[in-house]
Length: 123
Image 1 (cartoon, rainbow, N blue to C red):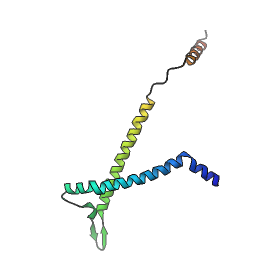
Image 2 (image 1 turned 60 degrees about the vertical axis):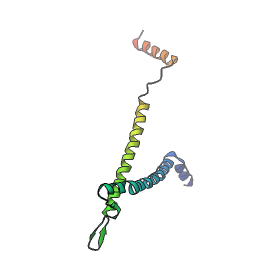
Image 3 (image 1 turned 45 degrees about the vertical axis):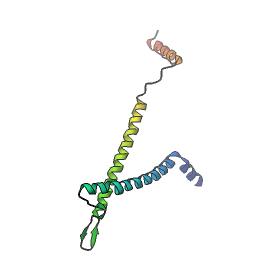
Image 4 (image 1 turned 120 degrees about the horizontal axis):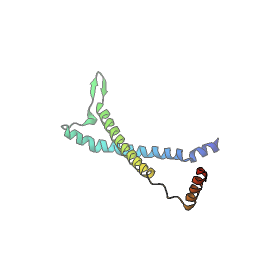
C-alpha cells in the first residue's frame, strides 16, 4: 500500500494538482487584496464614498453584512476574467501549434509513396 501511495504521489497529475492548489491559494490572496485595497475604495468613491465592507442590514437581532457579498462577487468576477484570459492565451498557443505545416517527407517516405501508388495502379 505504501508503494502504491508513493507511485500515486510521484505521478505528474498529483503533483500538478498540488502545485495548482498552492498557486491558486496565493493567487486568491492577491485578488482579495487587490479588490479590497484598490478596487473597492475606488468604486466607493465613484458611488459617493460608500464603504462596501461596512454595508449591512439588521433584521431583528441578525446582522446581514451584504457588503462582504458584493466584495466576494467582485473577487469572483476578477478571478474568472483572469482565468478566461489565461485559457484564451493557452488555446491560442495550441491552435498555432496545431496549425503548423507538417514536415517535408523524407526521400525514403517519397519513395515508399511512389511504390504504394504503383502497386495500387497495378502496373
